[in-house]
Image (cartoon, rainbow, N blue to C red; front, side):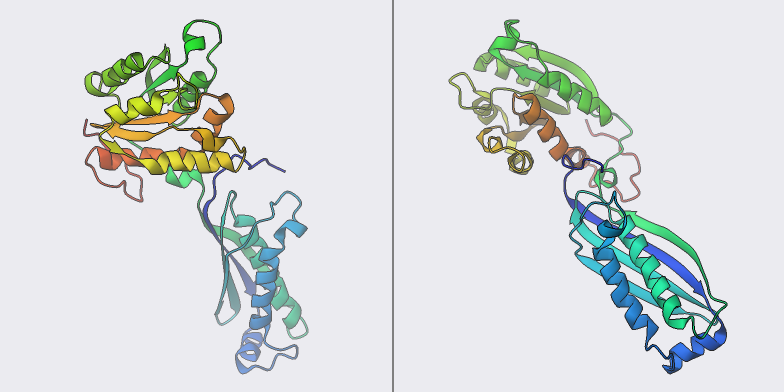
Length: 314
């Protein structure tokens, strides 16, 4: 079974459909309510709902998903029945298998209830017609790449006593998101040095996104939030809250991060914890969603649903 523990929860939707070819006489029996076993459509609807909720018991590699909604629709043509099933859930993985399973069971149930009347029935065209949700649906595309910088704040790393791992993880994950990393720097925990570097990124180099790691804890030299208080013009607390919430579900120490997120000019500064685990979890929590901010920050409005490329306003 695939590990989905690092994924975030999003609204997942999937729609599947199937067709059952029947004789015109069979369609007439359904409409007139003369099928010996009862109304096949109503029974099929119940069967589809049950199938969606029990997919994990039928298909070994499916995750156990709390289903929030199942809708079953039927279209009766002259010689065919179309079944459409839509499934919704707020979870870490998609519901396409739940929709396909529900649709399959729905059409099989109809077949079972009609087989005494019609031996010529054919089940066909069971397919997924739409699925939504997951990180890929929230990835923005910009004509001009987002420029970023990574700042590591650590006395021990700046003195060569420890190797930087967290900053390198950030660089790697940014590149995976299609973000251009223009600078990577290690400084001490000195407040003046951190402030000077951040001002250079924001005011001189006009970097779009600055990711920092370290200096967010309770140590006497941890001063990143205090520097942020001096520099940022507008705070964006939701981003930091998302990181802490995601981390807290995985470790009781995530709440100890004092990191902030804020805007200076047209630069977004995001503080990440200093630990490798904290960095990995934080990046998983906010990307690619955080990239949506640049469309509005640059004055271009929200990206279109078609995800056409956006130009920057920098």
